[in-house]
Image 1 (tube, rainbow, N blue to C red):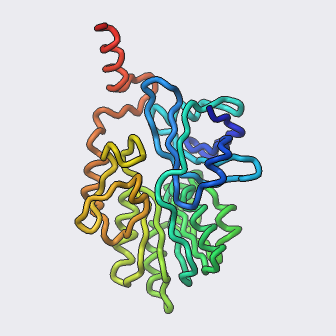
Image 2 (image 1 turned 90 degrees about the horizontal axis):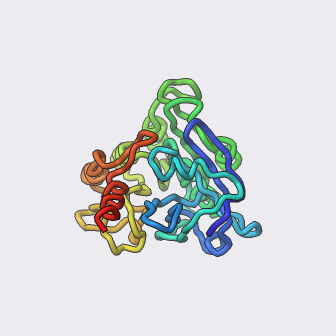
Image 3 (image 1 turned 60 degrees about the horizontal axis):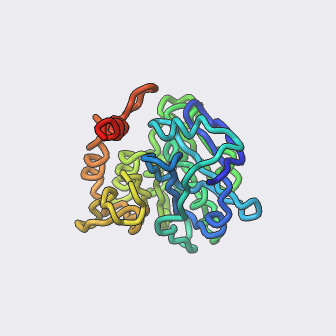
Length: 286
C-alpha cells in the first residue's frame, strides 16, 4: 500500500499527486513509468509516467487526466488515502547526454512526462527549448516549472486564448529552419500530435524521440498488448520503450490499435464496464 501525500487539481480533469514510494523514488530515471491499481481484486492496471521524484521525502509525483474509470476513481482520493498496488520504475530511461540544442515538445498532459526529461537535458548542458501545447489556456500545465529551466519557452493554444494560436508543429518547424537547427527533438503527447511532430522534423533530418502511450496490462512484456511497429519490427512499449525513433514508428497502426476497444471503454459516470460485467456474471454462476 502506498500513501498519497498530497493532491492538487491543476485543471478541470487534470490532477497532481505525490505518493509515498521511497524505493521507486530512489531508482527512477527520466522517461520511466509506474503501473498502479486501486484494489487487490480484478482492478484495472494503468501506466502513468513519473513526473518527478523526491528522494528525501521518498515520494514520486504523477500527473494524470481523469478520463476513464480508474483515473476518475484515482482523482477522488485525497491525501492520506492509499493505493493498493504500485509497481516501478518500468521502461527504459531516456538517453540523456549533451547533444547541443534540444527541443522538448509537450502536448496536453504530455507536458508532465516531458518535465523530468527536460530537467535531465538541461542538467547535461544542453540548450533547452520547450514548446507547450494545449487546447485552451485553462489546460496549460507546468508552465512555471518549464519556464524555470528552459532557455526558450513557446506556448501554443488551439483557440489562441494564451500564447500563440497554432499547433505545436508550427514553432517546431520554425526551429528546424533555423541555422543551426536543433540537434534533437523530443515529443510527448497525443499520438496524432507525435506523428505530425515527427513528420515536421523529418525533412530537416532532426533526430526525433517520441514516448508512446499504448494499451498496457502487465508492463513486463508478457501480454504483448502494447506492441507497436517500429522500423518494420515489432516492439513492446513497456520493455523496449516507451521511447522510440519517431521517424520509424508506424503511428497509423498504433492509432488503429488504440481504437480497438472503444466500444468496451466507458467514459460516463455510473457506467459499468464490460470487464466488471463479466466478473459479476461469473460470480453469479458459481
